[in-house]
Each structure stands twice: as C-alpha cells, then as structure tokens.
Length: 141
Image (cartoon, rainbow, N blue to C red):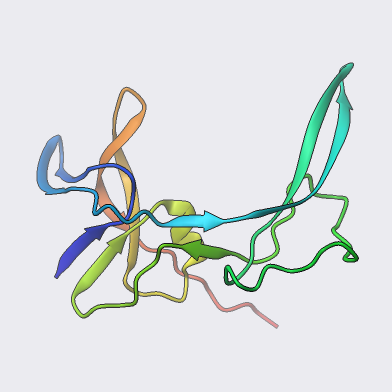
C-alpha cells in the first residue's frame, strides 16, 4: 500500500513524536470547487459586511444556474452539493491523502484519507499520528 499526497504541503506520519513516514506533495492538489452566485451585505454593529452565497456542486460541469433559483436565506453560505478539482481515478493499493474538507466531500471513495490527530509546527499541520476516513452512516427512516 502506498500513500499519494494531494495536499499542497509535504506530510509525515508520526509515531508519538517521531516521523516514521514522509510523503512529499505530489504536485496535484485536491480542492473543493465553488461558484459565487449572489452577493449582498449585512449591517453588523454599524459595519457593512459583504456576504457571498457559495454553491458547491457534484461536478465542475454541473454548476447550477441560480439566477432564477431560490437559495435559503437562513444560511450566509449556502452549500448545494460539492465538486472536487484535480482528483485522480482509484488505483490498486494507493491511498489518497487530502484535506479533511475534501474527504468530507469524497465519502463515496474508500481510498481517501485525511490527517487526523494532527502534529503541528507553529500552528501549521506537518503530519499526523492517525489517518482518518469519513464514514457516512445510513439515515434512519
């Protein structure tokens, strides 16, 4: 089994305080795609704050036309599904290391992991002690 790093940072897997596996960035970075659909402002304590509604969708070619759509006003940031950019097809015996946010979008892929129990250097994640996997439990009827 190998680990391909799809984050913009070099990465290390730790055992306690010791790095036991170093995985350099691959050059391919997995990102969540988004489209601004509407901009408005809010008055917060006398300051005008811009608010943008962000739509995320299942594929980059399937971004909805929201010009006539209704976006719930209860949310400042509206998320309607997700799409991921720069993401390879599955390969045998290869795990793909992505950000936690990307992993939360790619729940249908069993080859996706993210840094859990992070190791930080000055606040920046440099590695982890555990590789996390997002598991979606079936919804009860």
